[in-house]
Length: 222
Image 1 (cartoon, helix red, strand yellow):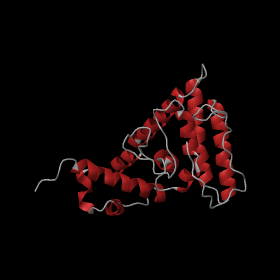
Image 2 (image 1 turned 60 degrees about the vertical axis):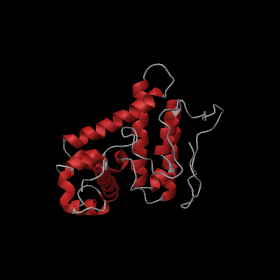
Image 3 (image 1 turned 90 degrees about the horizontal axis):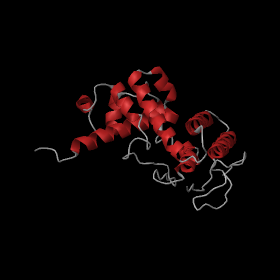
Image 4 (image 1 turned 30 degrees about the horizontal axis):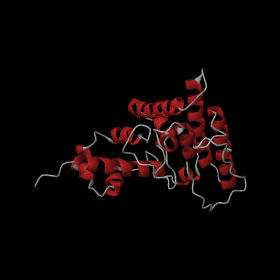
């Protein structure tokens, strides 16, 4: 009996989702094809009917909400509207949010996998570059100042990604929260978004205190 329409794309997506979570949590080298397929509820033997190699799959995992309309932001309480005129500030707040910091398995791969990409082949590097360029493009169209828009957008993207990467290396949670807040404040200032809310009313950029609790329950809304 033939598979229903849409079966193959759905299975491929489940493999990519499984790989993304495992790569984000354990790194590329430490994850086997058996683990990836098991995470998708499939047998190892079916892998090669969807991907040529683990590296081929890796390149597809390096997608994000900037490039994949089907990629769902799984950071609870965080929403980014790519059609919004203030999308730049939304991206910065989402990227450096507590939810993104804590949800390692569903991280944007530019945060979780940059070291793996640097050691990988050209296809993975190009995939990473594509996502980074897409992020820069989203930020750039939200900037209002004249001149150096692309340069500013690139700096904001690098600050957001790098800030989260460094924060995740820290044992001291309060220091990690302080770093995220500092990067967020500077990125919002660079974009001219530090004193504007969605409604256009004056609003200070959020700052997490150095003594921020490990178990904060506040939900980020952007």
